[in-house]
Image 1 (tube, rainbow, N blue to C red):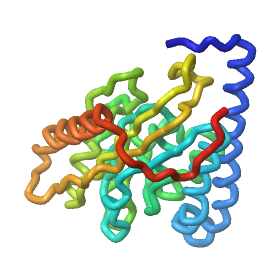
Image 2 (image 1 turned 90 degrees about the vertical axis):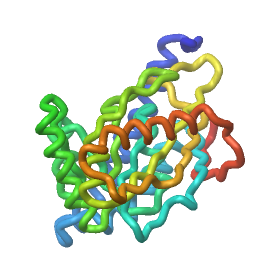
Image 3 (image 1 turned 90 degrees about the horizontal axis):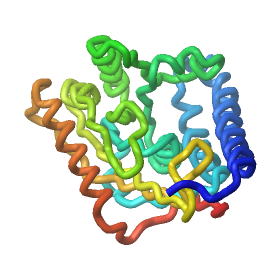
Amino acid sequence: MTSRKPLPWRVLRGLWRWLGIVAAVTFCATASLPTIAVTGDGRFGHRVFARRWGRFTLRWCGVRLRVLGMEHVDPARPAVIVANHASHYAFYAIGAALPVQWRAVIRREMRRIPLFGTLTERAGHVFIRTGDRSQAVEDIRAGSARLREGYWLLVFPEGRPSPPGAMLPFRKGAFRVAIDAGVPVLPVAVDERYRPGDAKTWDAAPALLVLRVLPPMSTDGLAPADAEALAARARKVIEDALQGAAGDVEEVGAGRLA
């Protein structure tokens, strides 16, 4: 379904939302700079800003966030979080909802963004090269070091936002990292629901985003050769959750419906 709104209104709406997104990232990154310079990592900044950043961004964009399954999150045991890449709003939703020290796997091209790239790398996020598969696997394995340091790793294994109503195949790199580190995989289903007349476009935001945290998947007894099968299992679990009923949900950081 395409938007029925006139083009000038859509452009203004999109610019307004992206203004808030950029402003929130810039503020949190800049405010975290002193602690990163002193401590050499982003733990304090993440603890202070990550959830506030996610909630503010969703509120600004008029997105209500609801989360189900937080009982599956054990802050004392790191895991590799894998989620379907519905859109960039999935990133803000996970930031708003999960009370753990996670570090994201990000395309290396974003390392070139002034200030953002430097601070993101200093904070411990992992950059990967997507053009060379063997190099990308080597890069994502750097996340094993983050897991050993007690961080969680956040990966969107589709590699890019999926088309409406579909999911792309899951790449196996994140699952090899989980197997190598001996930590579980935590699947997260991101369910975006748009307003009537809106579609998944650059200017539109979902009216409601339901985040379903699913039971963790153990990697005990698995070998690196099992990564592809584990990726397929995780994708199926998320796909089934998206096709299932919403059930009772807990609201987190509710925003105004614009």
